[in-house]
Every structure is written in C-alpha cells, then in structure tokens.
Amino acid sequence: MCPGGASILTGSQDIRIEAIRVRDLQDFTRRAVENLRGDQTIPLTPQRALAYAANPCASETDIGLLVAYCQDKCAGYLGIMPGRLLVDDALYPVYWFSTWFVPPEFRSTGVAVRLLSRALTLDYDLAVTGTSQQADRVYRALGFREVGPLRFKRLRLPGNALLKRYAYGVLLRPYRSALKEIATRQVARLSEGFHPPLTVDKGNPCFYRDVSVVNWMLEHPWILETARNPGPVSSYAFSDRRDRFRYVAMEIHGARADDLKGYLVLSISTERSRTIVKVLDFHIATDADLGLVFPLAVLKASLQGADQIDLPREVCDSARPGALTRLLLRSEERACFLRPRDARSPLATAQENVRLSYCDGDMAFV
Image 1 (cartoon, one colour):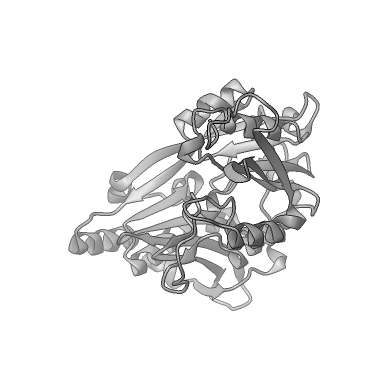
Image 2: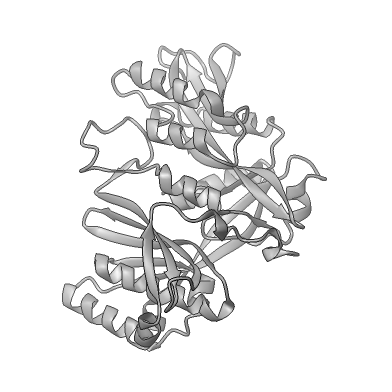
C-alpha cells in the first residue's frame, strides 16, 4: 500500500516509474537533495551522479537510473551503469545493474519487480553481479541466466597486531629479491599508452576495461572519506562514506626508468577499524612479470596494516605462494547474471564463453 492506503499493485496512477538519462542525472540528483524531507530516500548521491555522467562507456542518452514514485515519494530505484563487452576484437555496449533498492515501507508490494521489468523494456544487453540469494531468485524468474561463478582469492591476516606483522614478513620473504629489482611510482592517472589490445582475449569474450575506464574510476570515486567530507550523512541506502577509502595506482618499472613493466591499481578501505585492500586492475607487459603483482599488493597492504586482501585468482596462481600463503588464502566466488536483449545480440552469442573478471560491473567502486 502507498502511504494513505492507496494500492500499489492496482491502478496506473499509484506507482509511476521515471527513467533518467545520463545527461540529466546531475540535475535530477541536485533537485532530489534539495527537496529531501524527513526520512525519505534519495536515489543517487551527488558524487555518484557526477561519476555516472563522466562514464566513458556511456552515451548521454543512455538511461542511467530508474526511479519509482508513489505520490511523489521515492518508492525504489534501480541504477544502470553502461559498460563494454569485447567479442571477436569488437566492443559492444552492455548495461550493468548497479543499485537496486526499495525502502522498507514499500517492500512486499511489487515495486522491486516492476523496476526490473521496466529495465527489461529498454532493449539493452543486461548484466548484474555482487547479488544476494534473494535477488538471485528474482533474476532467474525474470529470465536472467547465471554464468560463472567468478572465483577469486581472499587472504585474511591474523587479528593480533604482532602476529599480523610476523605473517606479512613471512608472506613477503620469498619475493624480497624480486622486489629489489623493480620500482613503483604512484600516479593520479594511468598513461593512455597502457591500453590493452583488443586482441588480448581473442576467442574469449569478456567485459572490457581499458585505461579510460580505470582513470574514470580513479577520478570519480563513489565513496567519500568521512574526515575529508564531514557534512551530514546522506539519506542513501548504499555505502557512500567510510573512515578511509582511496585508490592507489602504481606504475611498475624495472631497474631502468624507461623499463615500464605495467601498472597495478588497488583500493584501500577502512571501516570500523578494519582495513581491506583489493587488487582491482593490472596490466603486465610480459607473462614472466605477472608474478610481481602478488608481492606488490601484499607489500602495500602490509604498509596499511590491512586485515584482508582480495585478489583475482590469476594473481595468486602466478605467484607460486608459500605454505603460509596457502594456509591464509581462501577461495571465494561471486555470481553473475546475464540477460541478452534478444537471441542475436552480442551478449547472447558470447554468454556461453564469457570470461568473468574481479572488476566486472560496479564491484571496483564499492
């Protein structure tokens, strides 16, 4: 029921769904914040609206947000983030669900499904990851196909500070010589020369992130640090502030300054005194140097006193981990759901063989 007793499921006037184009997201969010009353929910934060508008994969006419209203009150929303699908050396648009939320007072009313059903009318190739078991059931019922799952590694460090310091020392010991032979330089943006070639995954469709997408992420974080942004917490359902949240982008060089081996991008997040480091994007020029990613990530995590490190599986496989590393590493997995717009779309032809990545969808932003 809508507030006041009006039925949500009957009558076209009870619930309306508004589609917001990418070009209009910032103005829409500004008005939503200005008109916010009491415990109402805003569908998008200003920093996310700014990021969505700057997405290099998006067209200004793309739909970036669906908002359900009941008597002019936000009854739910669904964020949509344009991305790219690489198939046979060609790039095609794909659209990721980013946020899907219904306030408690509107749950069990059908609003959530109506938002998804509206998204299905957009004639987009759709994808979603990082979901819950309850959401998974809804996606399956609406014809989404589960692929994967994506498997990655999680390294948990001891909670005791002395044991943690000792564990980091043991983890890094096998790589000390290799680390002495390289240098890293932290940068605000990655060089455009780092673009991975479109042929890098020939025969293996994947969701493609080039340097323009990585730089977009670096310049437009969705999550703010509380100390740097001390204003009131927004009425937004998803995490938009943490004690610490930042990206670290590093160029990796050999002994000579002109020996550029590649790059590595991490996120560092602290909330309630718990720090998590995630290995996001990396590009290494040669397979022989791929083993550098693991010790560099562990070294950076040790300097932050991190309690947990999330890593793509291929990073761990190339590192030849020692006994303690194998003891602390755990396998994790994440579901991914796809729904092609029709039987002949690029996503439909690719979904059987699509290769999943840790940064698919919006996972690198949160």
